[in-house]
Amino acid sequence: MAGQLSIFIDFLYEMWAYQYPKTVGTMFILWLVFLCTKVECTVDFGWILCHFIVGLGLTLQYADIVNIRGWLSLGLLFLWFLRLGGHLFVNRVLTGYKDKRYEDMAKDVKWKGIFFLF
Image (cartoon, rainbow, N blue to C red; front, top):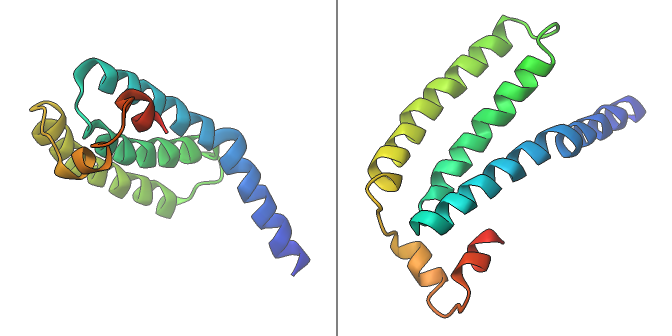
């Protein structure tokens, strides 16, 4: 049991020390894009993008110990990112689609920019 706990603690450290800053930075940049474009659906694309960035980061960081299964998983993640991320980017972000979910969430908010940051 102690060995499993050690592996879990290492995993948590890996996520918080290396992967979390990448996702926070990506979402901050996309928040700046939102401030310029006022397209709330940018966050949907950002969610997909962050999954890909974390998968790519982990695969490249541990490339010396990743086996064929890991590279295939990265390939499938990339295909999923292209399919869903491409759809969201082209059909929502580029067209300026207004999603009712985000309008309902922020209908009573005075500072929409700060609201969507948090």
